[in-house]
Image 1 (cartoon, rainbow, N blue to C red):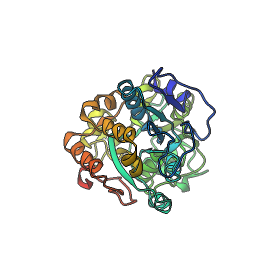
Image 2 (cartoon, rainbow, N blue to C red; image 1 turned 90 degrees about the vertical axis):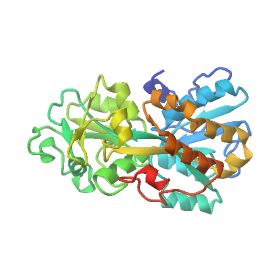
Image 3 (cartoon, rainbow, N blue to C red; image 1 turned 135 degrees about the horizontal axis):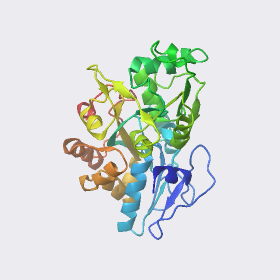
Length: 348
């Protein structure tokens, strides 16, 4: 089943009995659908339930892992939904979920919110991703762009001012510019703005914003002056109907995203680690949560990450991640700061 089909049917109740998709009323991209009331002690009512929300970028990994995990654990039910990294942290720090997926590190204000609620967490890197900038297939001018050019079109001062492609680069044509991107609750939005405008979470507001990456895909497909961005998996799924823009990296080379260049770091500055955060109390008190966390970071299951369109973590990093989980090391290795330009291996 494609990512597009999955997203249209979110949020998802994944059950070991039928592994079916249940279409339910949703708001803000997807609501947690676990039975019972969430609590600051657990996140889901039953010790055999695992409640997950957060990043739409990390969703395909969590969904793939949940399906396989429940095939081997028929007594466990995993609920996976998405409301963006920021929306997921709101639920997580309110005690509504066990695990929060995130496509950027937790922010200081979110750390503070969790601390105020008495919620401790373990930060778990799960894979690498490369933000993919896409344009309409007929776009024959934006073959390679710099982070500075992207910043020029997305920065706050560009609102109602930079409305044409030739304002970004005078070699580009006199063509109306239309922008499509994740909403402000998205970790992808935060990372992209940090890497391009230099101000995390700040951009022009006059763009089509959505937590559903498929709306971005459709917008650019239908607009020959359009440009959008999202995680690599969504480009891979739609590469026959979109054109990816190469990004000039720190060595001055124009690089298109691929699993290899995301893994080796040459696709910079748009390559990044992605995460999930698990509540310490859930990890300690709910065996289903602990088992599912360990399942996701088991190297034997890394093929599911590749199938979802992302880059598995190398063995040396996985070993350090496993130690963090085993020792229940709380807090963030980024201390509420940015991961742009920071090597995950150095932080671990």
